[in-house]
Length: 432
Image (cartoon, rainbow, N blue to C red; front, side):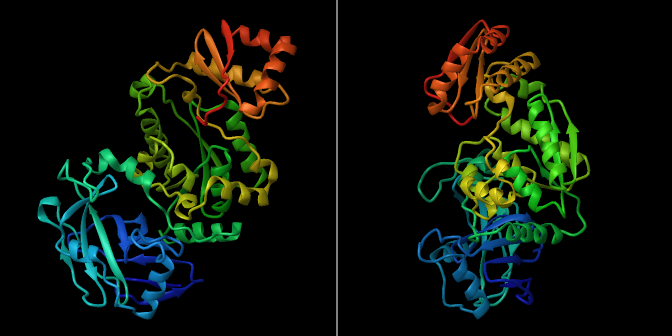
């Protein structure tokens, strides 16, 4: 590929599967929130005016056109493709796109290499063409209109209220990755392009964050948060994995049982993640990576908003790697790690809007450890409806759970020390 700088000068060459672009700062400076090239969205979470375009990223208007076409056209100087969106955005008008309110400014190259200011009522900002053959759309954050319409006619809020929706719906450009080395090279180029920064991977010890920590081990530390919401077993496993695979590992202890987080409202996950990322940032890490994958983006995950606010890099999501892709890659490193069941924080065991206390969290943790002694149970969640325990396991493991509780009097008696009533959810585990 050809990497373009402000005037389109080729500075390096890599295999033609992705493209990094630097658009250069305008006057006044801007921070790009969304970027499209010929109608194909590029990832703009790298730096203020940098973007990454994957070859397999599809066009939002033409399913037969995508990132590879844009990359090739930028190399060949194909200036014949001009979108209707370009004419619409050339006037610097404000519009809303999938819940994120942006001000868009368009520079059409090679027809023009010029600056266009965004609407003054939306805080200014501008963009500049990246060079011959590249059609660039730069989106600068808009803090104005709180109730403008989207192209579909639906009304949305501005970025801060809608950032979660925008991030969750964003489609990242995958590169058809087939090996660990390609992921490692991608992450290392990203980190090194930022200069002499300290980078950390938010490392829970789960499969996703392990893959990122392993691939980034030469350029980033793995940082595990020790809070009331984290299983003691998960902390131990994270330390063991880091030691086994030569990953520099650090633990940061914080408390999250205060204020709105303990009240356990709908913003709990978002507020908790903000606290986690702030702790990592305060520990001296200016760049944070995490294990969010492309499957996570499609799910209801309130905490995703915090990733955008802290500029967290999610390489698995950026490259279009799904949960299955991640497990396939991890199996090449260690099959036992690839087979680890999914884990979530202990706070998810407490019903929404019921106060979270340390007593409830430790009760849940102890109950789940007791149930893990049953040999045929691969995954378990204990929902705390004290004095009732509602146990979830995968549906095909419910007979084994009932049989185990019936035959293992020691297990049942230990659980009865914690809860007055032990119940089994016949619907099974529901991915929380």
